[in-house]
Length: 63
Image 1: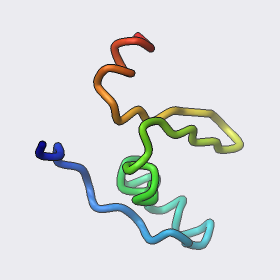
Image 2: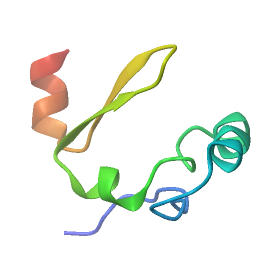
Image 3: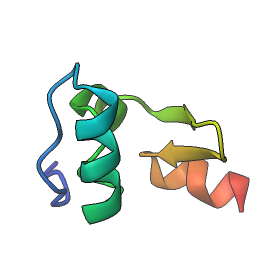
Image 4: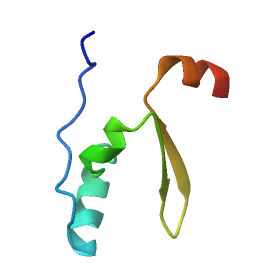
């Protein structure tokens, strides 16, 4: 099974300033690689909460 393309991930630990800059450029590139290995991941910020789902069957169930 081939994996779909994804943007390059950020390093695991970055400063808040660097994270904000990456987030403004591209929200997907601002995420660490571990989120792309999980079947589902929750992402929390002070302003919103989002979820990253990596399994097609799970996406169908959620929707």
